[in-house]
Amino acid sequence: MLPCQRHLFDIPDDVAYLNCAYMSPLMKPVIEAGATGLARKAHPWEITPDQFFTGSEEFRTTAARLIDAPADCVAIVPSASYGVATAAHNLPVRKGQRILVLDEQFPSNYYPWQRLAGENGASLKIVPWPEDHDWTAAVLNHLTDDVALAALPHVQWTSGGRLDLVRIGDACRKLGAALALDLTQSLGALPFSVRDVQPDFAVAANYKWLMGPYTTGLLYVAPKWHAGRPIEENWIQRANARDFASLILYTGNYDEGARRFDMGERSNFALLPAATRAMKQLLEWGIAQISLTIGAMNRQLADAAAAELGFSVPPESLRAPHYLCLRRKAGIPAELPETLARQKVFVSVRGSSVRATPHVYNSATDAERLISCLREATHVAG
Image (cartoon, rainbow, N blue to C red; front, side):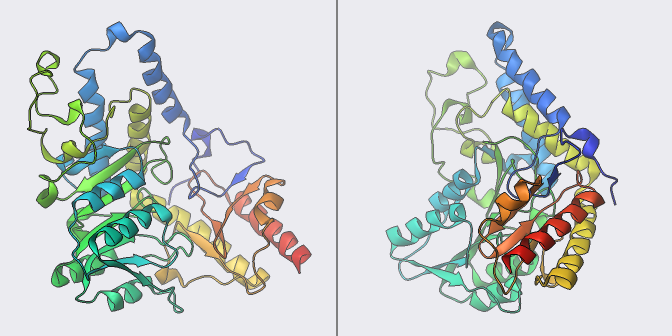
């Protein structure tokens, strides 16, 4: 369990921000790292060619530690959708086959597969919302011989349901199906290892649980796909990129490993240092410790919301500890987020759930304020 880390953030005492799944606040050291990097472009004559690569490799190495993978398997991407599109650009699907997705899956992990299926005479196979909240069992029940690939999250974003990706990965391999993952709503707050899960591709945007800036992300590419086709062609992904004088000697050879899948202008001197600094802090805290700390707060929130306010919560064994989605038979008032925001309590409504996603910057007082505000808002709503 970690003590409250609010001192690292610029969060006023009267603000209860329990909405990390929407967007994390940046830590003060992360802002400093980004500002220092941005200021370097004020003196571009001091930026040397090798600096186009050092920051990228530091990001890659740090991200690799978070997912328990070799650095050569990490590509630098601007978004989850970019990473999903890269996977869809390389994973084969034949006519008559199916692509497995979840009910209410995040759009960026739905649209690329919808397009891929339509272009190849395949179809989507949607796993319906399980009444027993067991997304893992539901996925395993729908992994049939016609499934060419499963495109899944680690955490379903409107329920907080956690998928057992080790079991699902094993089932996919036995079936001969590919596995593509969007870890944006889990990586940094829920332990994950590509060595255990063995996905083909896995992407995570940095701006949520990785606590970094917008427009940065990491993409894991399994070695079997390292010879694949990137969705853009740029100079820095080529084998001769480090020698600026030879850039006009066009080459068909790419840099090693997953670097061929890097986005253009990956060497962002402001964003990459900030994203790297955030990931290093997460590693310093320990992902397991972060998960335990947030999980303890969410357990208290879940107990109070169920006992006092009539909200239903998925069983703790089936939901992600850092992710709490509260449902209520009477429904969720559409104006609830605005009502709470006026009292400086911040959560989200996603689908038919109130989504509370605290982090290590939250205190017991923040949790108490949320329950108090929910009590008042739901009482007024009837």
